[in-house]
Length: 216
Image (cartoon, rainbow, N blue to C red; front, side, top):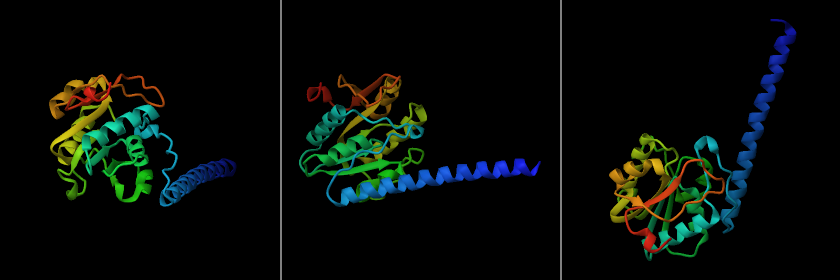
């Protein structure tokens, strides 16, 4: 290898390293800014979707409608778990209520929400704090991937979290309908889930109670 080729490789590596560092510092600055907003009592503008994590945010209307239903179903001083559903969590935090809210999420950017944030990886469905066992009146789950493995493990988490007679809402693709019904006893709802960016796969809402009686 000539010295010129070696120098070119070093320059390319340096450029790649610099790009990665700049991206890292950008994320750190964004996280610090959002943390400041939270400490000042504001709910910050949302992080951008990370498609590598299969993140697709709900539309504002969908998030608001789901949040209203969660609060109604949970009741006064109820508890709500948002499993892989950060847009719903953010909407709930913006609303006036006395419910307890937890976000179980893999994306550590959402650690800015401090005690409400529970680091969660669907690959380790029960790797969550013991005090969350049978602790929630309402659980909303939005499994990140349309696969049997992901849904089955997310369902195990939901069962771990739910109180007896808890309300379950699942937002996922139509291909998961049979599995969702078998594992969680949920059925398809008429309520439509819409995203900021349209998805190619049909996306539906399922519940273990008559959600359509309250939402259409």
